[in-house]
Length: 362
Image 1 (cartoon, helix red, strand yellow):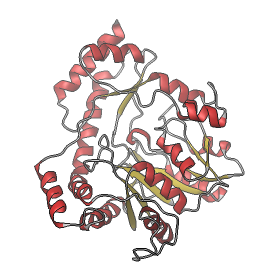
Image 2 (image 1 turned 180 degrees about the vertical axis):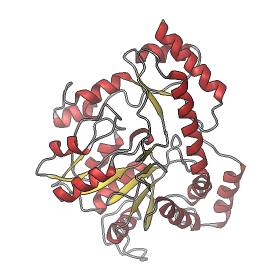
Image 3 (image 1 turned 90 degrees about the horizontal axis):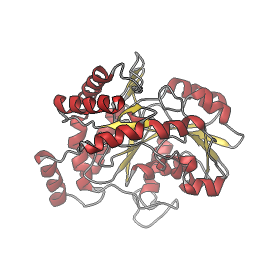
Image 4 (image 1 turned 90 degrees about the vertical axis):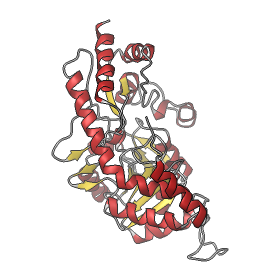
């Protein structure tokens, strides 16, 4: 990763710091408006983090302690932690080995009578097949919330992620394609009632513009003005950065095509347009490749080494064991994220690929 904080962003941050309210200033409202327009939705509501966005989105669509919410166990743990924070019970359906995402047919088989919402995760920046999830949600009468925390600007069937569900959630953590110089998140929706509830919940539960009258039990999960100012600059550059990521991913494909014991990530098709938050290969000798690259001072990542259902709290709370979701468990042993950011040079990519090929031969 290589988060960007350049002169223009610093100047925007300083302007906000010197001229706006520190919290929920003008930059925050403009960032929300611009992000909503970018995603093609009516509303965007900023939050303190992507995790908070997921929790508050679920509560804003009416999820409570009597409900269950279905998602994938192969994601960052925040996806399902947010379900618990919202008072509901997490349910899981195994990942699809072809693209590592949740698919609608597997999700439907895993649904129970208590399932009231589904959270497909656009993992690594590759969009899920959202038309199938929309159809499933309509047929089964459940809510649909996109976890787009890794998918800023990804597209499916000509629409950007964040515009398909009853709500969607983004993270601006420093490793993401778009950041805010700190933590932050965003909820997007076309539903006026969901937007009103989310705005209220993020700001202590305040009723309308009142300072002390509360209509809900809310949270303090607001975005700082200085962070929003940085986010506005980054949003203007996001498409160019995503295009650079696609070019780098294409170079990785050319360099690693046909390499033994390596499986490349699913390619885009006419319906899906990934933004390659991560370029993730699969290999049964993942740890050997990782160690070989580390010896050459090439940093890699594993996203994620332990599927959610095998994390200690989930084993203890829900009784999950090894073998509960076999595909997710295999992926956790085999996935490896290679270096990728918009400024990585072609020669650097080729050095990484050379070392991957050498590791496979050894």
